Image 1 (spheres, one colour):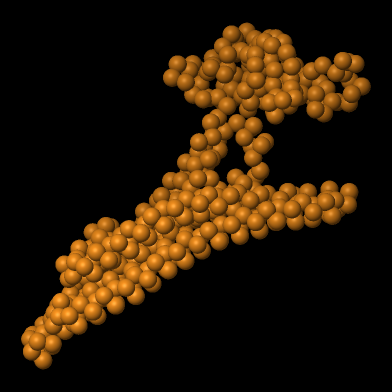
Image 2 (image 1 turned 90 degrees about the vertical axis):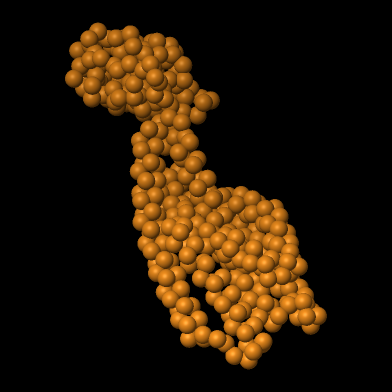
Length: 415
């Protein structure tokens, strides 16, 4: 792929140098020797260059499709490993946005814009040495403008990236608001919550507007700074080049070739700052959000010395088990219980008393904040991540969670 793109970019340099030779020959002798052969060679180089570019585009498309599918399956596998706590605290709109808009921007950044950035880089690397060869003084001016522009972009780009990340996060919140509103329409209408939901949505929109303004303005600042510096570079180069021709230090052909190659370099820098860099900034924000998902640690991490849980033979024992969804208010406190193998057990209590929470601990949907859940003396938090229910609970015991009214439980309300 890189070789194909390099062949394509080399044609631009070859064409400018060929024009230089034609103009110098006309200036010196009034005619061009072997003009037909020269034009024919340029045309042949044109066919090779664009054929190579087409081949490179095909490779980029294949790599992009495979990369996107690899990211999808990696992210999906990560979701399967995460705890219920992650899904409880993370809005569903935020999760779906990472699989949709974030992946779409990441694909654009890692395929089209990465390709364009490589093309722009090749144009600069190929043509700057030729500029120095044509005239070292003008070449140094061109290099100076590129160095200054690099420092300016290095200062502005990280701020634009951070603003883009914040904007993507607030956009995900909007998606979540819409999903919640859609799913709860019957309740919203039944209890007259329309004004409340509208106020919440308007509040979220205000946040999107603020972060969107910041992200767009910072991206535009990056582009504008690059265009201003490139325009100044063009003005200085033209003025200095004409002066050198008037002094006899350059030929007209050299100046035309220099301006042509200088424009290729300037357009490469301009394209990078105007089109490539803003999209890469947005893609970087999306990459950060995808990395946030991939770096989430599951409640129970597989250990090298983890053991498989055997088929239940004796009992399930809970010892001083505590659990909290928020980390502050306890949902279960100091639960001690022994369930013999082969017994039918019902957890009875009102809504919110902890029945579902207790079951989620038994099947490892959650991990206790403290205390242990042991199967035949094996702490299941130290066991392998193989599901507990199919291998132990289903064939060995039947645990039934039964909802009942407050009248069915003791006055203490214990679980």
